[in-house]
Length: 318
Ligand code: GDP
Ligand code: ZN
Image 1 (cartoon, rainbow, N blue to C red):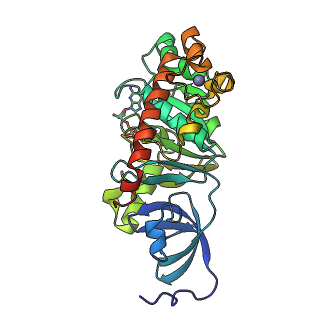
Image 2: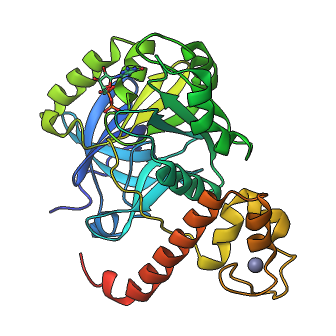
Image 3: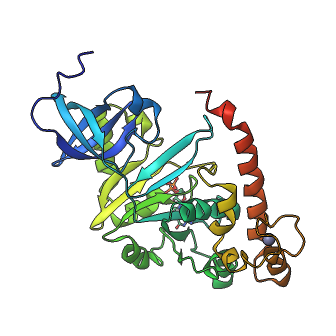
C-alpha cells in the first residue's frame, strides 16, 4: 500500500457518523465518505480508532473514499467492556449527555443496568438522563416505584410514552441543541422515540446504508445524525454493559450518595465491604443509602476485582 499517495493538498474535516468494521462513514460538507484510518495503530488501539461522533481529518483518495489522518481529541466518551473481547469499547464520542432508555415493562426495567450506566457516566463525568418509555397504561405510583430510587439521588428522570406522546415534549426540551447518545437494551423503544420527533429519519438512515451497501449492519453500529438543533447518536441495543476504566478505589465515589460518608469510616482505606465502623454500611442500615444501590456497589466491586485479576490474560487475547 502506498501510504503517502493520498496526502495531497490539505485534509478535509468531518464527523464520523458510523463505524463499518475497519472503515467508517464520515460526514463532511453534507457529503458522506467511506474512510479507512491510516496505519495499524488506529485499528489496534481503541483510543485512536475513530468512533461514532469523532471529528476527524481525512484525505480523499478516490471518489467518495478516503484515509483518516487524525482523530481530534474527544471531549467525552461513553465506553464499556466489550462482552466479546473483554476490551474497552468506545460506543460514542463527544457527548453532552447520555440518555439511558429503559422500558417500564416489556422488556422489564433493569435497575442494575441503570446503576451500571450511572457508574460509567459518573466515572467519565458525563451528564445523564433516565428515560422511562412505555409508561402508557401505567398509573403514577407504578412509575414512581421505578423512578424514585434514582430521582432521590438527583438524577433527572422522565416518564414517557413514544406511543401516546405523553411526556415527549419534555424529552424534546432535554435533547434540543445538545449532543446526546440514546442507549439502552433493545426493544425499549429507542427507534420509536427517534421516529416520534423525526419520522423521516429512518428513511434517511436507510439511504445512508444503501450508500455504503452495509445495510445489514444497521442494527449493530452506533449512528450519528443531526437532531433537534443538536445531534443524536443511536446505539444498537446493548445486552451487557461491562464496567471499564473504573478503578476499585474510585467506585464508591461513582455512587454519589456514598460521597458524604466516605471520609467518615474508621479506616482510611475502608472498602465499605466487611470493615467495622464503616459509615457507608451504617448509612445502608439507617436507610440513607438504598440497599439495592449498595448491592450494585458490591457486585461491581467483585466484577472489577475479577477483571483486574484477568488483566494480564485479556490484553494478550484479541
Ligand atoms: P428499540 O429496539 O429500542 O429501538 O425499540 P423499538 O422502537 O423498535 O420498539 C420496540 C417495541 O416497543 C415496538 O413494538 C414498539 O411498537 C413498542 N413501543 C415503543 N414505544 C412504546 C410505548 O411508548 N408504549 C408501548 N406500549 N409500546 C411501545
Ligand atoms: Zn466504609
